[in-house]
Image 1 (cartoon, rainbow, N blue to C red):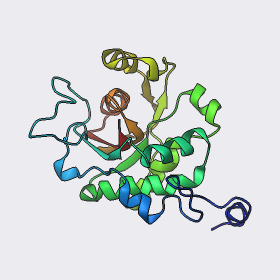
Image 2: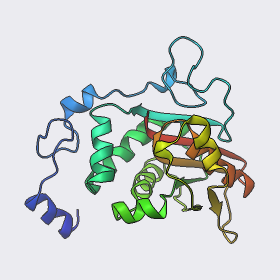
Image 3: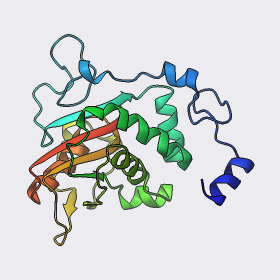
Image 4: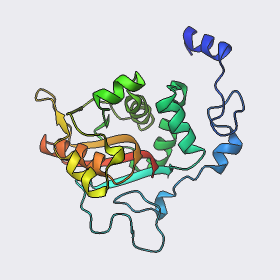
Length: 224
């Protein structure tokens, strides 16, 4: 831990996002209460927990990515961690979120040739002051012993939050680009914080496949 990090802990120690207990990003009790997704009983296409044998979340929908994993449900305390991290700039939660995703993706260890993040829009970057997905994806890459490579750039697009399912997919068509001088590895794992309809990650996967990737898988902290 660096000097600045030590000073930050002295002045304002990290607190559990669930119960406020100092010393933990998420204390053992709150972590035990988190609604984690058992990947063995989740849809391999969209990462949603399965009820029965068929996924009702992505039926009739085609994705450019081949597989998806979501570490948990977007419910407390995970939703609280994500909110504090993104909107309150509590960057010390990045390692926790990265570890949760890494654990969920353990079966993919050795698969990706590179890990990259979904980049934020310019407006989101200015609003938050930092690239929240980059830090999570770097933790995942380190945890899976894979190289982290910033492959994607974002184009100007409408904010997804107020859009419906079909509008989200239309909004993400052509939303990402890969720099022409970047060599895209064959197998790429794309990391994001939340998967709602899959439109954002689908747009990212399209761009990577068009730039030469042979297969794209995606992983997110939480499934909305």
